[in-house]
Length: 119
Image 1 (cartoon, one colour):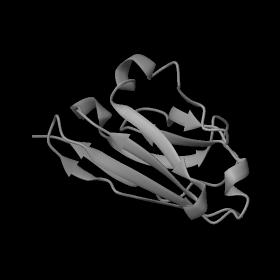
Image 2: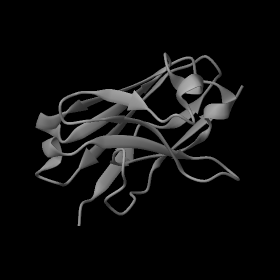
Image 3: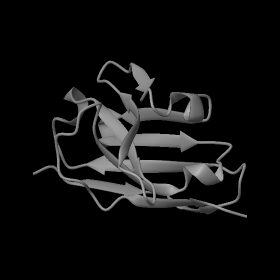
């Protein structure tokens, strides 16, 4: 079973930035699309953005207007790692962030990393 380990979350003031990382144990990492998902209190876990093996990226329709221009996904296949650069963070970005295959989930969830945006 693929293991996913997320890191990089924290408490940040509105307008701040964070860079999340997710490392996969799958030696075939480079062949998979990868996504970042988030789970906010009282809401269902949702896809935020994904990146395909060829580098194509996109945002989930439900959050595109909210995060496009602020969130950027990238990957380093040599490190089996996918990143989420988040800038100009807003309180509504507060959630636990997870990675998984994207845009469709294939593996068990990791522990995620908490992002809290508050002054």
